[in-house]
Length: 87
Image (cartoon, rainbow, N blue to C red; front, side, top):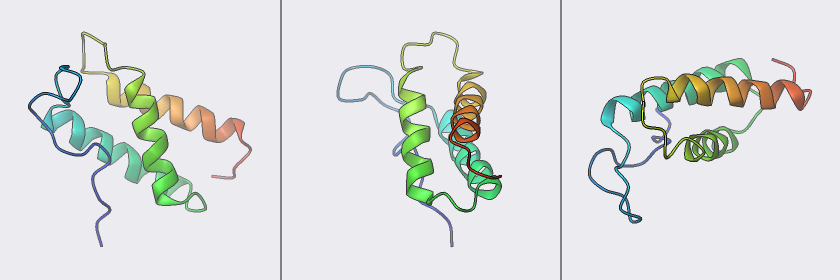
């Protein structure tokens, strides 16, 4: 069974007028969520998805989008390591 996408719909404009997440970025963020879930199976899937969304929002104004998924993954992994959760 596949998990629902972390980012919602891709393309278009968001309610606040900012460009929505591209399909490529949405796919990369979904991959981040799956990868983290595989490394931390004790963390609920929805908690991981929420953390990915939260970290991603912090990069909403980033002009260069290529590395946003990588930055989100690093931030999330650091957060989980700091929480003392075993991987």
